[in-house]
Image (cartoon, rainbow, N blue to C red; front, side):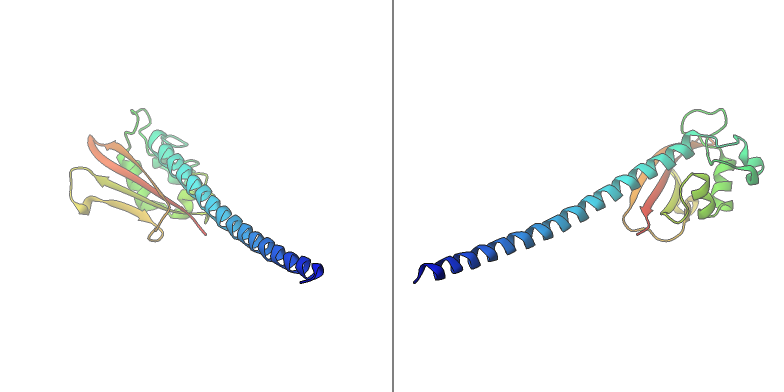
Length: 167
C-alpha cells in the first residue's frame, strides 16, 4: 500500500472516532442538562412548599383578623393572632378551605397564578376519613409535599401542602 492511501485511511479512521466522540458528548450534555433542570425544578418545588406551609402555619396573615372580612386580605395566614407556633385558627381554616379559589390562594401567598399546581390537605390524627379537608385543582403526580403537625381547638392535625411546577 502506498503512503498516501495509508494516510487517507488513518484520516478516515480518526474522523470516525472524532465524530463518535462528538455525538457522545452532545448526548451526554443533553442528558446532564435535562437531569440538572429536573433537580432544580424539584428543589424549587420543595422551597415553595416549605415557604407556603410555614407562612400559613406561623403567620396570622395580613391583616391579622382577615377572617372577619376576607375581601381585605392581603396575605394569608392560618395561625391564631396571639397563639403559639403551629396553633391554627379554626375559623381561618374553615374559610381557607371553603371560600378561596386556588387563584386567590396563589395570589395571597405571593405565587404567580398558574405557575404551580397546589393541593392542601388537613387530616385529623385521631378521627375518621370523613373529617379530612382537601383543596386542590387537579390530582397531583410528582411534585413535593411538605407536612406539619398543627393544633386546632386542642386537636392534632396533619397539614400537608403539595406543590408541582406547571410544565
